[in-house]
Image (cartoon, rainbow, N blue to C red; front, top):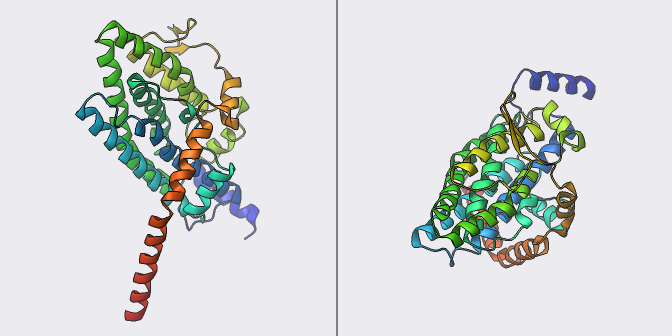
Length: 314
């Protein structure tokens, strides 16, 4: 059977709602798209631990420290789920990490902003993890089976992170005027980068059309962003936070909020490596990746030793 016929059959399977598994035929463009998206997702989970990691020793209570430690452990696990799912496509984890270090692969632009105070940890949990959940719930129905199953596991844990972040913000808004000001300042700084997490407008996204066609994504960038906006603005108003957008308004006819245009120049500047923390985040990742080489070498030696034993006793 020619590739053209196989591609047609593949698309008909996608259109009928079937899951694609690792051993099934898939067009090379579909495989490459998945590797790009899944590796970026995995890298984001791992790099995304850095802002919270900086606050473990400075968290204001033992309970807050416990929550942060649990969250960081969760995010590390999410990265492993996603690297493992991506490896079913014929690429190794070491290759994906090498692509990250060389600049060929990216991670989410949101993690290039600094966490200046405790309110930032609340904003990250509520807004950043909140935006991630909106995207990830949709990905539970993605067409690639291993990716879909990884997302089901991840979403069960991610919802806790959002609630914990919102709890921090709500508590600060019930506190002193200084605490309220800190919470509002964090809201002002994290609101727009959180909206940028969904990517450019669909008309300007080079990958959106294929992602929807192949049902890798079930909803477009703009649809997911609108869901997040509609859900989050009432949450902010409920605890007394002001959305940092003078022009936002609820359209009574559609039931959706309209907002000002996002600063896409800033989005592209950060994506291109010129965000406040781009260099710091990658330097940290490289440093600890190098320092952890002995762990990977020991794991590989252990694996080879047991493989040899199994072959000898077979």
